[in-house]
Image (cartoon, rainbow, N blue to C red):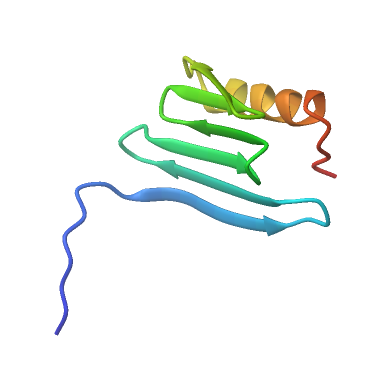
Length: 81
């Protein structure tokens, strides 16, 4: 029997294949997260990177995180639909 202890639990893990990019979403119960639109836009644990330029990001809620991510994807020239 193989047993592995993980001190966190993934609440959501999703990968979507779009024509222009691979979108990955991970949310964990210990408040870690990663959202990526290929390498064009990446949000990860207090940081966001858009077209290779990184800056600090404060997550206030999952809804705001989603809104900010979608807005940045569109501003960078990507499409989620």
